[in-house]
Length: 258
Length: 261
Image (cartoon, rainbow over all chains, first blue to last red):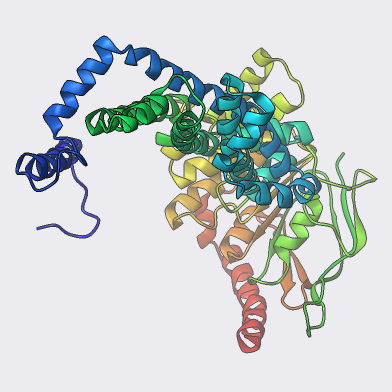
C-alpha cells in the first residue's frame, strides 16, 4: 500500500526512476517498430543509436558537444559573475533595489531568443553573440532571485549579529551571504538548466558548430534519428551537470544537511 | 561600575487606517545598578519585550532615552549582549564559531578568541559539542550556546528576552540554575524578561511587575533570598510568600488582557 508522504529507500528511488526510462523507450520502440508512426517523422531507437554512433565517429560530433558546453557554461558564468553581486547588493540595500528592481523585472520578460537578430547585427555570428544570448537569458533571472533570497534573510539572525557588535560589512559578509549561499547555489543550478535551452536556440540560427547546428543540418536531411540523438545528448548533459551541481552544493554546505 | 538608566521611555506604534496609534509603553523610568539582576515580569502584550529591545538598540523609543554609563544608546552594540527567545544561532557556524562571532567582529586574534570560546563552552557545560552545528543541538543546548555567545563579548549588561520560554520545564530549571551560577560567580548586570513567576523570583534580586495595555511598571518587589540559591529554595516559605503576592499582581493584569481581548 502507498500511503501519503511515506518515504522510499534510496535503492527503490533509483529503481523507480530507472523504470520510467525503460517504459519510455519501450513505448517509443512499440510505436516505431510496430509501424504505428511513419519512419519519416520518428526514427526508432535502434536507428537513433546507429545515427548517433555515426555522428560521433564520422562527423566529429564530440567537437559540437564541446562547443555547446563551452557556450552554455561561458554565458552562464558571465551572467553569474555580474548578477550575484548585484543581487546581493539589491537584497541588502533597499534603495538600490527600488532603483533597479522595476527595470530588471521588465527585462526578465524580454525573450532572449528575440534578441538573436539584433545580437547578430551587433556582434556578428561569432562566439560572442552566442554567449550574449545565454547571458541575456540568465542574468536578469539570477539578479531577481538572489535579491529575493538575500532580502528574506531571517531578521532575528541579523538582529543577533547587531547585538554582537557587527557593522554593515559584518552583516553582509558574515550573515546575509552565508545564510543565502545555499539558496544562491540552488538558483544557479536552476538557471544553468535554462542555459542549456538558450544555447540550442542560439545555435539554431547562424551557427557553424554545436549541437543546435547539427540539429538544423539534420532537419534539412529529414534525419530524425540524428535530431533525437542530439536532443538526448542535451538531456544527458543537463542531467550530469545537475547532478554535479547538487553534489558540489552538498559538499559546500554541510551545515544544511547535518 | 555599570548603570543602566531608562528615562521616560515610551513607545507608540503608528496609527493604521482608521485606528488611533497604539501605545505599547507608557513613559517608564528604571535604574539598574552594577551587578544587579533585575527580572521584568508581565503578561504577554505588556510591552516588556519592547522595552528590552529599546535597551538593546533594536527598537527606538518614541520619547525618552536610555543611558548606559551616562552615554545615550543610539543603536545596538557589543556592550549590551542579548539572548532571544527564538533560536538565533548562526546555522552555518559551529558552536565554537558561534561563540567566537562577537570577538571576531571586534578583530580579536584567532588564538585569543579561540581561548575565549573554549572558556565559555566549558562554563555553560557544552564541552564535547564544540564542533557541532546548531541543527544537531537540543533547544536547551542552543540557548546555552546563545548565552555563551552573548557573554563572549564581555558586555556591560546582559539582556535576556524569555530565553527559556520555548524549553520544557525540566530543562528550563537546569538553565535557570546555570545562568544564576554564572551570575553568582562572575557578577554581571542582568535584565531578564519573563512571564514565568517562579523564574522571576528564583533569578532576580528585584522583580519589576509590568501592567498591560499600555505597558507600565506596576510594582517593584525586592527578592531578599540568600545567594547562592539552589532549586530547593523554591519550596521555602519566603519564596512561596513572594510567589503568592506576584500571582495576585499578575492575575489582575492577565484578567484585564483577557477581558479586552
